[in-house]
Length: 119
Image 1: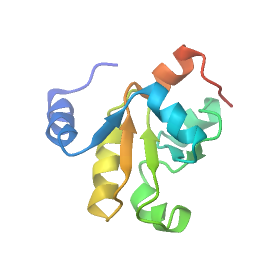
Image 2: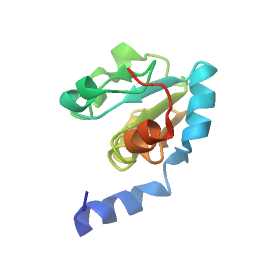
Image 3: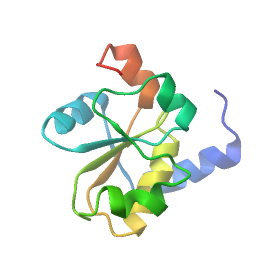
């Protein structure tokens, strides 16, 4: 997918404030108990998602995160389709006081291409 220059500039401006993790690290941390959260559109989630992930779409994550994951120090790894929208969402959660949030680089495309377990 081709992204607009303005969108890419926004992502670039946020990357220095957001921790990004590799697929391998995300899988390791998920196995250790981190919350893996899919922020894609509901139709994308329904078509397939990372095994064990929970769904909190980007459109509602800021509204619903405190009910879903109330501990502000919980380890949360966000993923989207390619690792862009999850950067924006991670920045938002950090602004809300979450202290251990990261964005998975490569997103769903990398997860599914790697053969990692899906549902």
